[in-house]
Image (cartoon, rainbow, N blue to C red; front, side, top):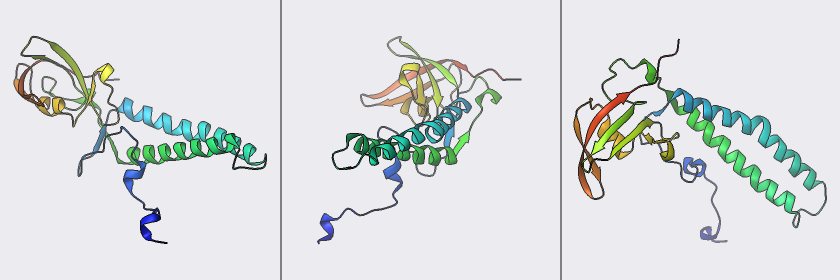
Length: 187
């Protein structure tokens, strides 16, 4: 058979990259907040300790029922098992590469760094608030933007009162840093 018709099995990291999950920039560390690390770790433990064993039990039961080719529980169980295993590999790799940054220990609280919550104003008078987090913690509904996003790159190292240039598809846009806050230090 011609090699063009045979699916090659490769150990490519992209296979484990979840759809919609951004890649970590080449040569960069996987910075993450303590809360983000804990959420990912809890998800991994849930998948390993609870979700996967339940699906394995279902697949085992379905396999014991006989003909697997038309057994929906078996077919969909195996598919779900592959999804869980892919997610476990993804989370394991991301957590292994993670560098937890506790922004509550930031000394220069008037300057923007990873973990900062920044309030900024645009030319048209709109005020926006974003928190700069890791690539695995992005949640635009809550205002969490990745440290590699254009807005975060524009804001990093800026101080309260600075005007920085945000590069947008419509062209450069000046934004004013109005306020910078960091989480409170825990005792």
